[in-house]
Length: 200
Image (tube, rainbow, N blue to C red):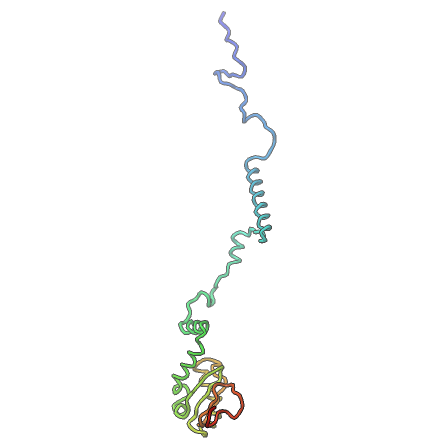
């Protein structure tokens, strides 16, 4: 009678391969998997970051996404934008002169240099500007009659000057006629007899 096949060891198949359960097939203890562990680690990192920011005195960062970032950004829009659009050279120079503090000297030089063109040749031939301080323009007239005439024309002259040099460049005009030599220097002075023909 034919020989019976030898008994195969336990856990081997027909081809001699092992049929023992692999470690992956063995049910293990229930617990968080890879994705859950990653989420837990990310949440812990965010909590720690928020705690450090709070300890440093800064507000906690909120995630608003791209929509919140677009909402916070300031767009120039279709209208003019003085901060980003090209500006005219004249306005840029006026802004620079005002910031540099040289506006008063430049205005006075422009007024004195263009005096005849601003007020006209007739008035310019009868009086000349001598000072411009704090909006007060002092004119020296060739005669007392013309000093009186300048005082009457003061509103029209102020309007012409401000139209040429800018609003509120000149606020008032003071016209002086011919007079003898004065020992006063400046606006403020002390009353008294002043110097006489002898000193000492």
